[in-house]
Each structure stands twice: as structure tokens, then as C-alpha cells.
Image 1 (cartoon, rainbow, N blue to C red):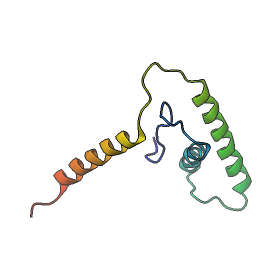
Image 2: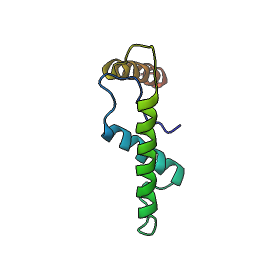
Image 3: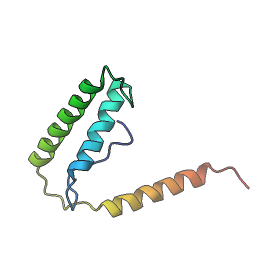
Image 4: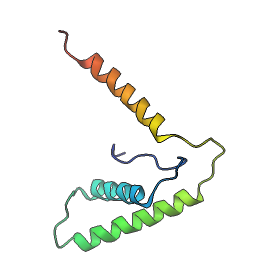
Length: 94
């Protein structure tokens, strides 16, 4: 899975349309192998992003869970701690 695509379900506040579109853009970039499509492919690329975003929003609206909503701040803090530990352990000795 592309590292730039983040979990969008079960957050408080819910994911915005902008976050959904950014995830769709990352997905289409990944599967097309192109960060910037050529002029000839731009229309198809943009249609794909919009279709993926629409499907994602529909999915997020349909999902149900009994788990309490997650916190983006807590998730970011956990990620920073994981990165700190990973990079701290891979640093060359002084």
C-alpha cells in the first residue's frame, strides 16, 4: 500500500472531502506510475481521481463500527514515536 494513503475511517472529526481526494490522487498516481500525467492522459487521470474519490466517500459513509472514534493527534504522536525509535536505533554510533 502506498505510504501516503492514510486511514480515513472512524476519525473524529470525520475525513474531509479534501482528505478523500488527496488519498484518491495518491492511489491513482501509484497505480498509473505517473505523478504528473501527460496532456494526452490528463483527462483520464482526472476522471480516475474523481471516480476513486466518489467510491471512497461512498465506502466511508457505508462503514459501521462499534469502536470509539480515533484521534488524528494520537495517531500522529504514535507515528512520531515509532519513527524516533526506528531512526534512533539505526543511527551510527557517535
